Image (cartoon, rainbow, N blue to C red; front, top):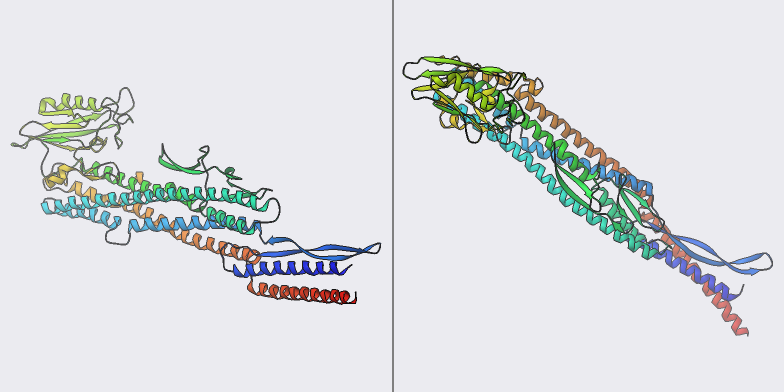
Length: 568
């Protein structure tokens, strides 16, 4: 080996030590940089000149690679943990919003409104002739209906906010996919099949981690250095091509449904984690669920109160009364879907009473409601015909309004009242009812009662000063109802509130546990990929000594060459 070869060895040592110092310095500079992955210099010995037949000297050292310390298995688990945490946090936030809407344990909550409403009927039962108490009942009904509508409106507002959040997050996820596709191209161009573009890969990993916060993704790296991204088995990104994301709103038998799909071919994505997964499931599972519970409560309240009220008598009878519910097809059976009535009418009968205002003489007529499924069942047109045939000669006229509602008119000097409705036809058509509407969206108070509280039915059996109807309605608060699964109206609402509260508390625990899992995995990743300043300081000293030794070695070789040159 000549002195020239010795100088070459020194040069390689200097180059390697210098590169290692740069790598160490870069690690230390990025010790707190989010997403940075620690790098180390990988050295390989060089073969030198041959000495003799079977031996050779070394040729120095070369920087063969810059190793990026990454554990892809841990990264995949972290992405799953990020998605789980974001999903839990999103659900927790939604539960908090819904609980704020319910505002239970306050004076303005729905439970209190229900209690005040039924208490007002109880007070009316004690003072059935007191007009001020009747007015109080009507006002409590207005308050209850308003509270139901407001609660439902707030629920819908939460659902609309979910849709807006989903749209924004889908746009951001779509943007991330485009950025990752661009990074794939940059990485391939930078690496050219050799080496590792560490900074570009770190940036790409950060983008993938952010994407994992929106949805559960799986990542497959290709030999070229690009990555493919999937949700389940559906590809979102293939190399340099993003298949895109979009949101679609569809009307189904269960209502309006929001789905996330690929823009390329419209394939639906089954997203089960991340904030988008939580929003998608929460929209139907949580928000639509509480809306359905509220509508069921309101619908049952409307029908049960109307069923009792329609058979009672107020302070005076009707000269004219019209139903509040429209029949879509007046020739269809009253209990058919074609009729389009919100509440079920069954086979039975109803009593109509015609009273002479001057003499007080009352005549009662039974109208049979034929809905037994044998032969042709009764339609609204049939009901009008039956009333006109049976009672028409006795100074009452039945008709169908242009918009498909039942109208009953007593002759001058007569008034009309009702009782003993075993079919629910009065409540089903909205005749002599307290509430209007079908559910919490449109519940209201019958304008007849609202404009004149004298029509409020408190009595029964046509006994002046009686309180049978008021008592029966007040007892609804403690009456188990089949339509509510054997629960009372207040119990049904309290059950819904309690169920939501339990799920809310569970979501808090889930958010805390998923955070711990994520932090534990991040600690494991930091042990592999993170920068230890103490370790880098030791490396810095080692490479500094190596550089100094290489420089000293070159100096010695240079002195030898000077000595040799002086001899020559």
